[in-house]
Image 1 (cartoon, helix red, strand yellow):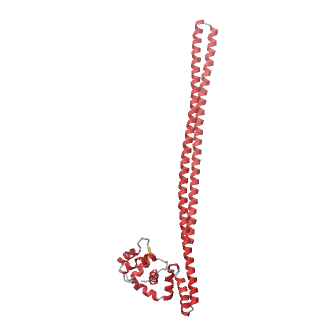
Image 2 (spheres, one colour):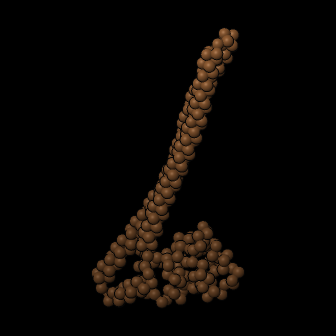
Image 3 (spheres, one colour):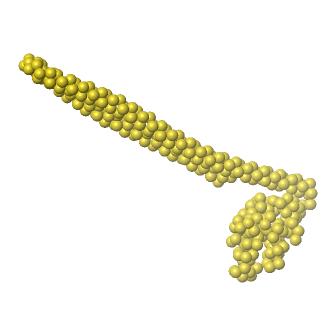
Length: 305
């Protein structure tokens, strides 16, 4: 079958004039040709080699000979071809514009073409064909541009998704490093403070033991001298040293209080870290929202196409 006839047959099978034969269209054609329901799916799959769910013109033309051995599609196209003017169909098939024209537009263009063809004004008819051919070329260019734009949008969306994932990974790694650094700094700071206070406490305890030893020795000496006044003086010194011991205990209690305050400051730092982490999560959510808006804009552009 020649190309114009094959194009007319494809148009006849394209019931809803979408530029491709969907399964519902194919079912209507097969039923008119008295094909059993069990064979319809098998025949459709022969055309739909890539399992896309539809048959475009390239699939139809490449598989036509094979399927025609089982299904007499030519008989279905015969009735449709009679309803159209031969010159118009040959012209449309020649410029391969069937899939680019809507049904209503094809009918209007066909009527005007038939009228010009009947008038035998070849110059006007040639100009009309050139205008239609120019419009078809512009339509093809626009379709190609839309496809390229869609491809660019998809590529940009994939790049944005990839960059967003990398950004999230970087932020997570930075947060983990920051958390570890803060913990190390606070641990070292706390260990230094505790070590300093422990040294001070040990030094004061050692001084206290030395003082007690001196007092005991002085007391022994005073007992040997049997001096009442010396005993009173030593008792006063013992009282003074006892007071100093109390002061040391108070200092130790104050040191323990300072340690508790440091623990409280550490808790505050942990809370600050939690706030920073929450802020990061909010920023991540904002980035995701921006990506969703971008995807929404992409979908709107695709719908407008």
